[in-house]
Length: 275
Image 1 (cartoon, rainbow, N blue to C red):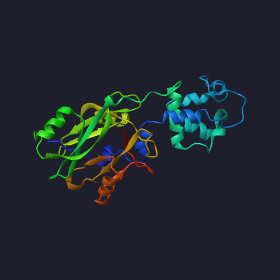
Image 2: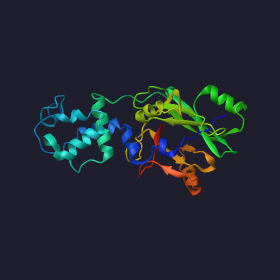
Image 3: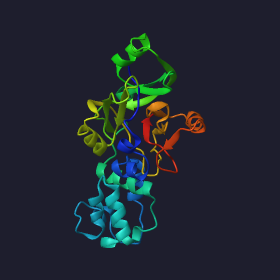
């Protein structure tokens, strides 16, 4: 029997700042290109000479931050090599957008075709008050046929990407039998969390199952994606359980029922779903 839960909140909780720091956020490449090419001071140089690939010249060390928003944030904060001119101009989201463009130059990647999308279907087990999501065709068929008895579709689903989609993180899936009949499945797109659980004897690594765009550090999502909210039941009913939803009214309902919204503000997206 399948349910979607965690061994304990203390073991695998990915909420708050710790979650934000463990995942490389997916910036908006197109907006980053605009920011990158917007002058910040009067200098008589082209972007090619000021923002070229040689990090030892003038502002070129911005390339050091390619795909690493934290590096760019550090450079701006410390003001090294002339970067002080950027201080106070960019939000954390801007920094991630800049890094996305720097790492993609000379052009932003094209939008992924919709054929790269999978439907992540949500199910509910009333006896345990548990939610479970899956994009695996065989598993969906068995759940729908009643082979895995007790599970019914909630009618909610959202898109995820196939494995190894550029700009997305592959999601690891683990399994634990620590709760008897309330057996547990757990998904994580965080590479460090995945690696850590692989060494935990309480969890069985089942493989990578789909890919998902990461949320920004402030819980917002880039254009072309929508927020996925993660809610935690705080272990009620004898086993932890998480629910993922893109529907704000469902999010609010679960909060009203005592579930805990996990994720960074102000956006509070745990991940982002491709549209």
